Image (tube, rainbow, N blue to C red):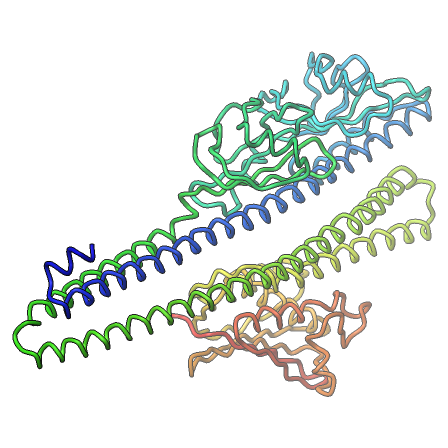
Length: 596
């Protein structure tokens, strides 16, 4: 190459040509390295997203199965109690089945089959005649296993409705411990698909629920639907991954159902024989990377063309005169320095990108740890607190219904107070969870018609108030705002509910909602003519569990205004209050102004 340049170009020219070629190679190399690093980063991000989503799916399914199992356990306890007492009350048992189904929206029916598999009790209005489940594998397994816990069937057709379902069942025992039948609840496959459809996995993504290796990986549900429910065809990569790491893992493979390459993450569904999978397609993963690659490729091409044109111009004008040659030599020297400086700058950019990527990964790990703690807290609240409350409320209701004639007024009052406090505790848990979720929920920002939203919320809250209360709404023309409509709706629900609640002592409640716009933000106010409060305690209003009135006088959990403050501040606004005792109160908040 050097010999060719020496023969075709004069001495001052061929080193310039070589330098331009080297610069082109250097630029192309730097761009290639950057694109390769970016390519890996997109796939690492897809793996993290898939892993977080699969864990969320697994935890959600565990929570729903435990809800159904708890409902079946209540029926099991009541049935075995009545059998031990020597008599089954069909009416009371049917009422209990209907009550449990009402608490479990995911099940189509709660039913009881006798020891021969015949359906004898159901939450439906009438028990279908001639239906037997005695040949079902889950029925046989519970019949033959005295110590069996919750049984989860393979996908099968419901013999009452014909729909594909998964059966959750528990064994019923007689007074002597012998098999006396099963209590079961069918969960429609479509229910799982509807839950999966709400997840954001991209156009080519998929969410799958399968049995584990003990069930030969039978398919229970898949979104989008593909393949046959119950089929056991899986990729060899997935089978090998589960064999080496049964609890969870991440891998990339072509799905057996549609032959689409995806980044998969699978997670064991608690202690149940199920596996949740989430797959993000490679096509979706690289959607943002491809324009980036095209942009850098175009940049390299432009650089190569410009450098080639520059070199050609220099070479063609070189031999005219020594002065021109000297000027070209100086220009080339400058060009070489510029190229070197650019290479150094690009190397520095690469180094900074590497450091930034390391910092992002560290922050991502910290965020993941925080999210895991929040998810653990939410799960603990949902499972460890709700379950005892449901049991307290359920058994209190049963005790009141079964012993109403034997209870005196004081006994009924005590049971009503137990149920009332259980309900209040449940509301407090809901408010605590709402408060924690407001900081983590992804915002969907859009223009909001605040006038229509305020009218809608007032009509809804007014419907919950006693019909004989006289409540007047004075609704001004509210300017539009920009924000998450669902969150801002919660702000208005809390403020208008408070206004109606604290104006209860007035013969005629007056609720005034007004707003103004200016300076890029809108100010909104909700006023009432209620009991008001002393402004020296205003700093306590928006704190968690802070109340200025007793719970007996005005019920509530003390979290509503804390939720209001958190939502408004997430939108970049602020919230404050004005009041005097006995003269009502005004709650003000600001939001970014929206379009018309």
